[in-house]
Image (cartoon, rainbow, N blue to C red; front, side, top):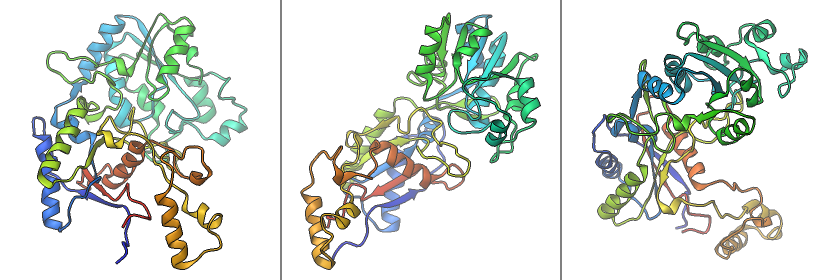
Length: 395
């Protein structure tokens, strides 16, 4: 009988993980229990996704607000500092700013507009146009912003982020400005912390070329071990989020060790080679709020080798409507399968692949995992993806 299904995705329930727990054992046991309870099996090439939060919590990768403040003070001393282009987020940046405010004498906070890097808006765009404000030219003070736009609340969270960030000041040490050229900050100080995520390297380069005396990124803060506390050598505070009112959970470190151990253990138990990845935010955009979901520095900080690269797929509808347009029924089905079996190993630039998604496999799979596990109370921090690398010709 012909196969009737393609890719299947399961969210796997797991115990709540605490610092010091055996992550490899937790993941493997959760999957093996699900296999037995639900009556299915692992197949060669299946993909196991593990949310980054599970990894970071197991390894105790946390820092406190005071530890952030201490690292800021150690790098900037008593200088006034500019903080450039943070995203607008209670979960992601408010705790970081809280630490910066405790560690800095004075902060000049430069916000991009009409939205931040990932699409959170600070103003109504149509009103901005009506007022004649030119985003890549005009620099707005906080007072000018309020005069023009009043109180603007985020459509999803209901938060006035300008006010929220202002309220995190220590002894009123935060001044807010709005502009889209990072070099504007040099009017106020030449010692800068770039808080953007995906554009941080360009921002740092522009500032250095324009005469900044000192430029760090969030990846440089809490990026080294100190008295046994949390750290991330590659990403620092990037990818961190709120654990509680005084603590941040960092993006996990040493992820490669975990994914390879889980792959090996599942192979030993099932005789199947599966691929394993750690995932954070998915890389997709909300069509209503216009928010790009990816607040983490990468979708997947660690993955096994079989997940490298991009898809290599034919566009079925292109062949059906073009090369095979005179066929139908079983003849069309078999001809299509034949085309798929004979496809080149690299279809980049070929008409046969037009309209397929030329993105990294880990970005596509990570987005699928993120949508499956969600960020709330589903309780499925492990995701099993089966049949992802199969195609129409796979029986």
